[in-house]
Image: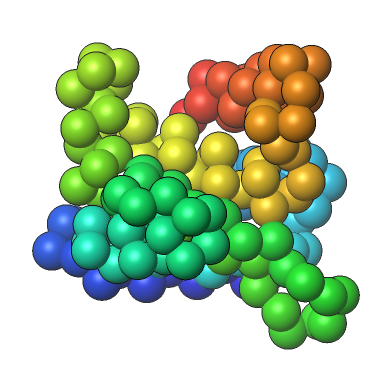
Length: 136
């Protein structure tokens, strides 16, 4: 099950982002995973980033893996469209494409990918990220 909660004033195409999430989960053989995706304001992601990553600033995406194998537990992706919009200016991607990239990035983290472990793992994760981004 994939759920989307939009706590911002951005218009979020829920059907599109659910489709992106399903594509990644299916591609990683995790099609039955429960995933919660929240779009939040900069103030909220700032608080979460400070609490969980000890970084005192807003960020584009946070992800939280499931902590158990309970059937009804959800992995969580939290995205800040306002920060992502700033990233899109630098990357020259559309906002929708940059949001998709952050969603893919977050999902890969919930599935155990971690670009901060080593250069090899970073390369592996970003190769998968670009693969899925090219499919949308």
